[in-house]
Length: 379
Image (cartoon, rainbow, N blue to C red; front, side, top):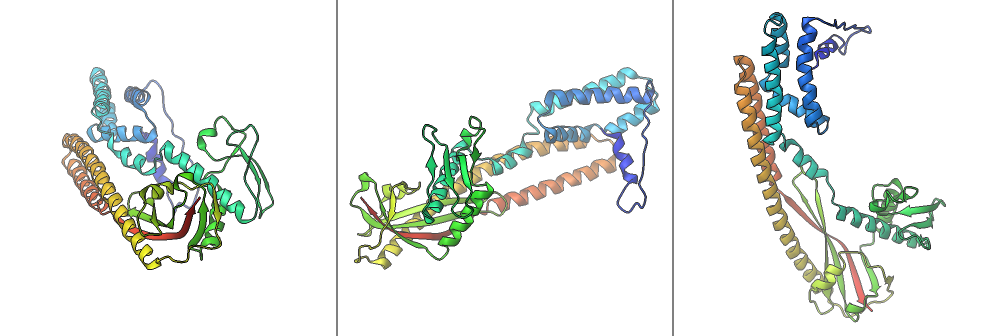
């Protein structure tokens, strides 16, 4: 309850002159007593149940649909506190209702979708760190430079920027190291320097979608073939876009090799360029095999992600229906007809918009693209 909010209405856009408002509050008055009783209960709610300002605001918003704090204040002042015990009882009812709201989980829903959209797992962070390191290694290699690890300092590196001539020292790539190595620079994918590196590498490779490479990996020694790198993007234009990398290795004989394909989920470290490749390759056949297998793998991912999304949306709908039902019951207790009807109409519109959004979220659109083709020899 913020009585001072009304004061701001006289200082709106268009006011030609500065407005100075002095808000006097007298002590030991009926008004002050009423305000103290109500605010003490609200402060208790804040202290016991506050899980951030957003959650507190949601609690108070739900309570205000049932208890008009402003109306309680006005009526109590008008009656001059003839029944102080009644006011104390009403304040306690407000507090108990807050307990019920929290206990029944009526506020659990508004945050789940937001957290899900922006949350990143520890495993994903570690993988991003490793990808950043490999990206920087590749970038430095383009200029004949290299990334060097300090002797006796695991995971801490130094290098010279081949373009800007800056000497980078005490560099780490994994967020898990950040707390214990506070003196180090964390070069993650969001770091300005790494974003610049990524843009430069993308520019260098923009016209080069094929490669020839030799990979040192004993368990696949002697294998030759073509590696296709596909990307699958899944989007409903509401939630965060999902990106999947699909490596697909087709042997020179035209067979899909699942183990080698999975091997390229991560970037191999012992790689060097080849000048010549095996001449007798049926490229039309290999490209067709690569595309067919990539589409098969993408279809499997799409199906699994669709099922997972449907399950998440269904749970959110169940939670939201519980929330709406509780809000409707609270609104039905409002005594003033026009206020009650207006609030109920707002609730119906909110429910309609949520249902519309749920339908849109279920429309997951896939986009499969071949990003890179590479001839590969294992030694």
